[in-house]
Image 1 (cartoon, rainbow, N blue to C red):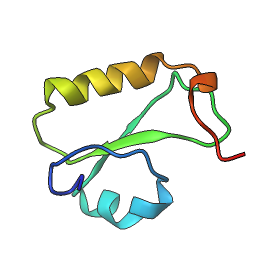
Image 2: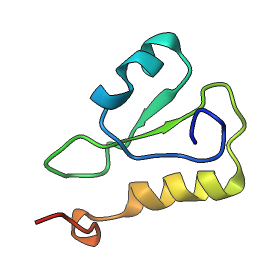
Image 3: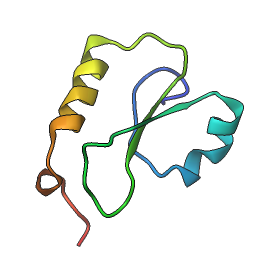
Image 4: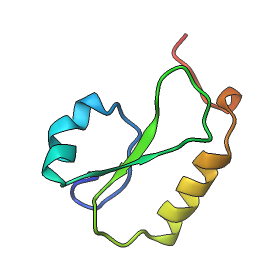
Length: 72
């Protein structure tokens, strides 16, 4: 869905290695999150960021780890 410019995703860097190498996706590191596994946001490079996606990125940057739901 991200490659089709229909959204953003939070996934492992390893799972999109080829797309990053080809430049079809772009990773945005979210430094403000202190979690046990690195998290980034991936979106189609060179595309316009909608106001909703921009707000989503801002919200992610402001969230504390305790606000995320874990699998434990």
